Amino acid sequence: MTQESVSPDSDPVGVTTPNTARVWDYQLGGKDNFAIDRQVADQINSAMREMGVPDGHVVGAENRAFLHRAVTYLAAEAGVSQFLDLGAGLPTMANTHHIAQRVNPQARVVYVDLDPVVSVHANALLAEDARALPVRADLRDPDQVLGNPVVRDFLDFDKPIAVMCIALLHCLADEEDPFGVVRRFRDAVAPGSYLAVSQLTTEDHPKEAARLHQLSLDVGMSTPLVPRPRAAIERFFDGFKLVEPGLAFINEWRPSEVDVEVGEAQRAGARWFLAGVGRKD
Ligand SMILES: C[S@@+](CC[C@H](N)C(=O)[O-])C[C@H]1O[C@@H](n2cnc3c(N)ncnc32)[C@H](O)[C@@H]1O
Image (cartoon, rainbow, N blue to C red; front, side):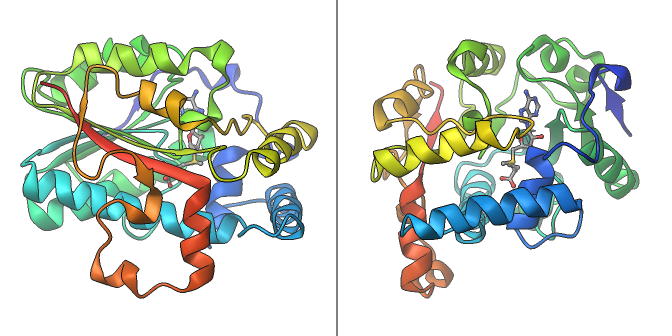
């Protein structure tokens, strides 16, 4: 099943524009990226290393590990069986539906992304999976998802849904009202639903974060990188109660035995991101 909420003509992103989804795919070790994406990612990574901070490969790996732990927690401990994965990115080895269905084979996942390349891959990959629905939509207009009859039919909005915003919200500038976007999803889901967020932060290294933001503008990425301070990231959880350990550096959020074994570099990489999971009462 597939569902398009964005007309192909409305997205001018091509092979000559560094594209957020494909740059991220390269950082994660994927192959669904073009020369321009690798060039920009390498540029960002060298700048990060020059600043003495871990690069995008390290940061990407930490995020995937958090996605894994958060989905496992939500499916196994919180008992959630419906997931709305916003800004889902290019499909990689362990996606939200793989992780959730390992716990509960009946779990259903809607994958939302604006990117046309993501859409092509997701459609192909998920075509045979009746419990995973790719939707191409621009989250700056939440109605493209919340008003989509196929999504409303696929998920039961009267039952808990986990809204996943993994490495997404820093792609939205303040002027694009990321707080309003999250609020719309919060108001649309039933009590007992959850919000999971990981987001670039200024917390540990404000100067480097400001340089990273500027670099994302200078290289003309399809979305900016907007690191935010802790207080701003906490605001995303308005109306949710954070579960233990609250908003934490990403590798400190319920670390698993596997993550405990990662090296120093990876642990330091975690300090670029804050992450948390909250419950709507
Ligand atoms: C850094 S990637 C993170 C991907 C995935 N969540 C993960 O953790 O691997 C951010 C994703 O958000 C998507 N995105 C950015 N702005 C968006 C928007 N306005 N609407 C929908 N998706 C968007 C990008 O296309 C990209 O795939």
